[in-house]
Amino acid sequence: MADPIARLTVLLAKLPGVGEKTAQRLAFHILKSPSDYARELAEALLALQKEVRLCSICCNLTAQDPCGLCSDAQRDERLICVVESVPDLLALERTREFRGRYHVLHGALSPLDGVGPDQLKIKELLPRLRGLNELIIATDPTVEGEATALYISRLVKPLGVRVTRIAQGVPTGSDLEYADQVTLARALQGRREL
Ligand SMILES: [Zn+2]
Image (cartoon, rainbow, N blue to C red; front, top):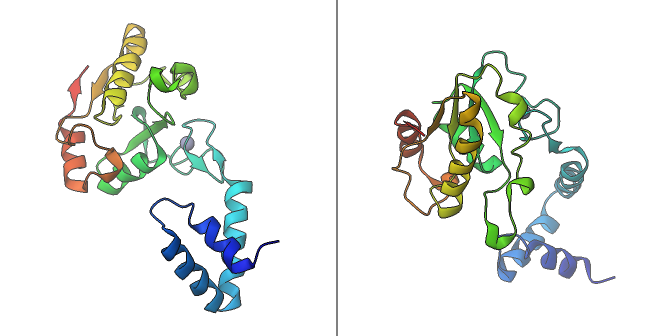
């Protein structure tokens, strides 16, 4: 077994944006912290693996099924916003502009990377369309995001569902997750028919 500090450093360095130097600094920080911290951190990591799963309705990540958003009776269930990822969902939530429900695709169509409709949570969306007033597609403004928006729109419009796409203004080629709240709120308000 490797030295515990080296072992933790190697694991932390695998995190996005964390280089080896930072990883080592974090490892020493954890070592110096009160022992409760290391234990709570370890428990939180284990719980992440054990308890977090997909909401059976919207495919959000959650420890309770259905998730908090799906079980919130204050939210309009006739309005669904389709996003690529959970961080995108959280970014839209931060705008406080949207009071409907969500559907998380867990990716976008990318045939070159082997991501087709079956790899996304699209079939989970279909049973949710009955009685829907509007489906807002808020995939990223990238080639993959646009292709996904088009695919879903072609799939559900024949079923009589109104489909809209959030406005441009979120810079093309970027990830929704990193758009600022004002830009995102404006994109949501300025959505157009697809
Ligand atoms: Zn849910």
